[in-house]
Amino acid sequence: MDVKELYRSKKVDVFAALDKIQSNSVVWTSYNSMEPSLFLSQLHTIAPRVENVLVRHAGVIRNYPFVTDPAMKGRIVPVTGFTDDYTRSVHDLKLARFVPSHLHNGFVRSGMADKLDVLVCMASPMDDNGFFRLSLSVTSEMEALAAAKMVILEVNPHLPITNGDNAVHISDVDFLYESSDPLITLPDAEPGEIDMKIGGYVAGLVPDGATIQLGIGNIPNAVAKFFMEKNDLGVHTEMITSSMAHLAKAGVINGKKKTLHRGKMIGNFALGSQELYDYMHENPSVWLMPGRYTNDPFVIAQNNDMISINAALQIDMVGQICSESIGTMQYSGSGGALDFAMGANHSKGGKSIIAVRSTVKRGTMSTIQPILTPGSIVTIGRNDIDYIVTEYGIARMKGASIAERVHALIEIAHPDFRDELRDGAERYKLW
Image (cartoon, rainbow, N blue to C red; front, side, top):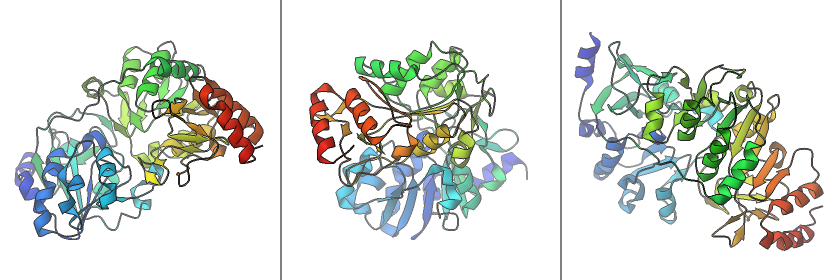
């Protein structure tokens, strides 16, 4: 059958797509800027007729009733690997479930490969050869597509056409419906004075020709501003950000010195401004690859001078990093922090950097603590960090004894808390 005829034969509306979801179904959705918003905004409407529908996602960016409405309990169950604002807000109602995981383990090792009933995924419009593109995320979508008993696409004309391992043929699709919902975008965060101090310290650790992994937020954006003075940077990352597009347009990021995928910006999803999505459109220098590849420490380490730059919620005085919980409360997820820290550590000339403000809660609490808050998750172990950076300087962890770590971290802590940290080191016998 002609691909256009196939398209017409599989086209339904969103409510017909929702009718395919039955009790006890396991549903997987595309992630981040690719969350199928039309489907998710109407998912709660099937609650009266279903029970125990598990909906696996990576945190939602928009607010949907299936996540926050108490009436969903026992009927539609969000299952996430990255806790979002909305899930946190209803945590005490026990509406959602959290799955700890490493992205480099991929879909198969997650234990979901033999349990997936339906994949619902946003995609770009079909081309003349019958291919759609999962334009802004292939975190685990391609593996899920291969395993799902049923594939449903939400086709959105606003998506760019991007390159990499992200093409889906119409013959592999069971149903599709069309949506014109606006894409999820994030405004560029403007770094403040403290962020710029941190950014300057971090940039000083990054040589020309390095391959970088950089996140999103005020501190990464500050780092990116200092990167404007660098030359021939490359990118191997989990998340492709707006700041990376700015650097590429300025000629700073060109991948000329990369030892893996020379000349290519490699990531598994993109989230940022419309300018970022426009930059990616039909750009052969940007490739999206599955998370099991981009986040594999053995792959990451093949990039010489691999520099991993991540944030944290709390750090203890021996260098343990908590990036995902506040005590026992799951705040976000592991993400790629450990994957890239390990990969950078095994890279020739690589460095693993944690960059944080010295205080939280409007200056009332030190980010660096003698010990982590009880119940906190250790996202990155003390053996896998090279540098910890605040606005007060740089603390080198690699090769340092406990006593040396304690001293170095006190030196970069906020002055208001240094005596408290010294007392804590004595109390817990950190020497």
